[in-house]
Length: 132
Image (cartoon, rainbow, N blue to C red; front, side):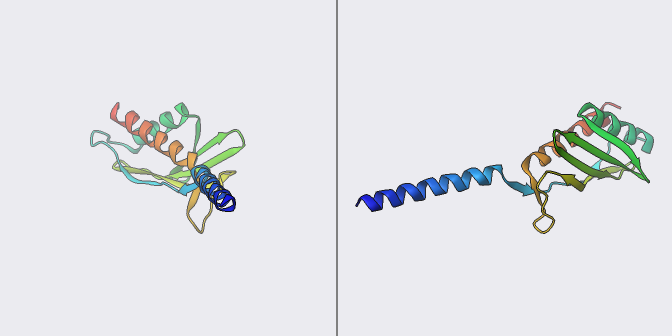
């Protein structure tokens, strides 16, 4: 009987440990594709300005990358790099690469904080665009 209690206690601890690890683990990479730009925006320069302002306000480095922008976020030992194509009608935030974010190309997963950073950036861009 004591062995059964120990076994069930061990199993409960193992399940709790596994759930804890799952909560700290990776999550599917969230890209924001074809996000709408308000119809009052008439130039790509306005869209670029909104993206730059939003990114800088959140600590992103926004730089030119051909006909699109590149966003780089450096936090402690972590780095996220995204591609930001844009036009007068839409923009996208697309994963490009990362450092120390446990990116798994086969599974399409990354550290769970990455998606929060992306969501914050997308929300801030929408606020910037709506204020133009």
